[in-house]
Image 1: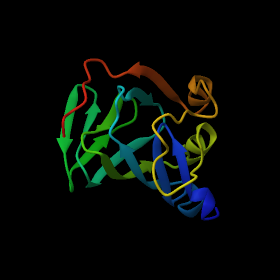
Image 2: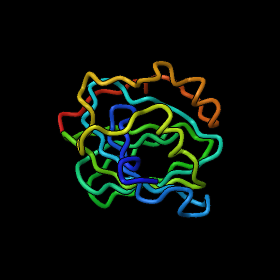
Image 3: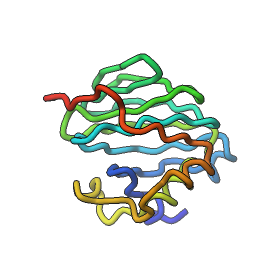
Image 4: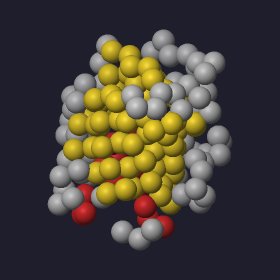
Length: 157
């Protein structure tokens, strides 16, 4: 994977691959994700195949895992096991998160629904996926898109 292929714009975020499945023998995928403060509800979804661990590096955010809401800033860790619906959002201008996913494979999904990043920042607010409807691609990866997070509201930070 080249340096240019390591940064992706997807879902309005900047995702930078730290370790790909090719580098971990398929055991894990690690990325840094920069999430701008969302003005629309984050997309609730469920993975059939992957578990996530999120570590907040800077900013503040909310992680929705099943019926649990975890709010926090730097050092906050959240666990998202496969099969449990989850989503997360930024409560500051930017939320920087280290994401560990096991097993690997989602990096190819993000590359498929996103595009190579055109800067070292998240895409502009009006950016849209070049794919349009990600639902059929998500289904191929065992991801069920469940729609906007109900009862979500932006935080004043």
